[in-house]
Image 1 (spheres, helix red, strand yellow):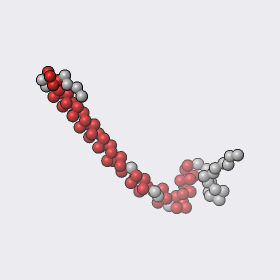
Image 2 (cartoon, helix red, strand yellow):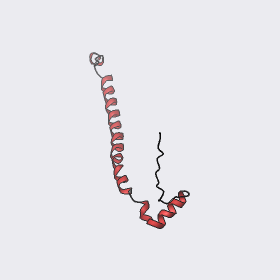
Image 3 (cartoon, one colour):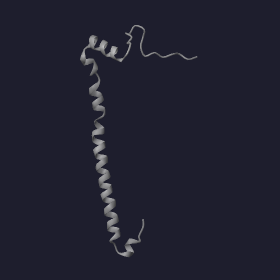
Image 4 (cartoon, helix red, strand yellow):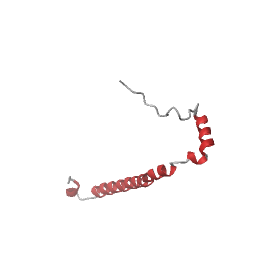
Length: 85
């Protein structure tokens, strides 16, 4: 037996559409109701502001390191050039 799950109770206001919902919320709670919970959301994405630039910089360092490694290997003596790990 399955039980239907409802997100709105019967005593909550029913909205006809999105604009009606926004209008009703604005009239009953004011403009601040639309920004409630915004700060925790913004704090939750601050790691992206750190991770993305760091990742991009790590890619640059890795590319330079690999390029330098192959450049040095190309210019090395023949006995060193054939050495593999």
